[in-house]
Length: 195
Image (cartoon, rainbow, N blue to C red; front, side, top):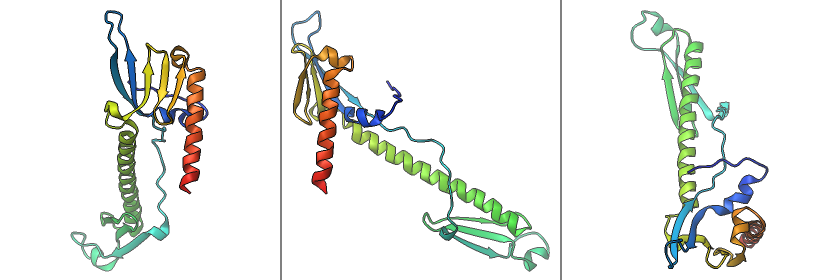
């Protein structure tokens, strides 16, 4: 299942929910405690459309005489264009048109498309690894939180904090707010400690 949460600081509050959540419950037709686990991934939403701006200082533009059919014109003018985007080492060479300006324009369009595609693929790989890191392997031993229904308690194992009132927490009330506040405080302390 997937959900989209929109609101001010939504990711800042929900990012702590990424990981394995363990549920301990007693079904109505049994007396033993059953344990289940689920993986949750909370990811920030990124814009799908982003502009590719190619910095002129990142480009190496070469002009040369076109080869192939075209009569004497191909031997007299440098209408072929090769553009290399230095940061990505992506190269496009065009000699389709008789005009250097049209070849350059065409080469820039193709180069932007290739650089855009490379950036998009890099973002997809980064998002995939971010999702994997957020979800973990799904193993119960990687749990971040346990919801124990028989004892009416929720334990967050990252901060070793236990709250009672599982029904309030499921409604998004006090215990959840308290845990998020404690997790944010721990995150700030960890950032300061790493400096």
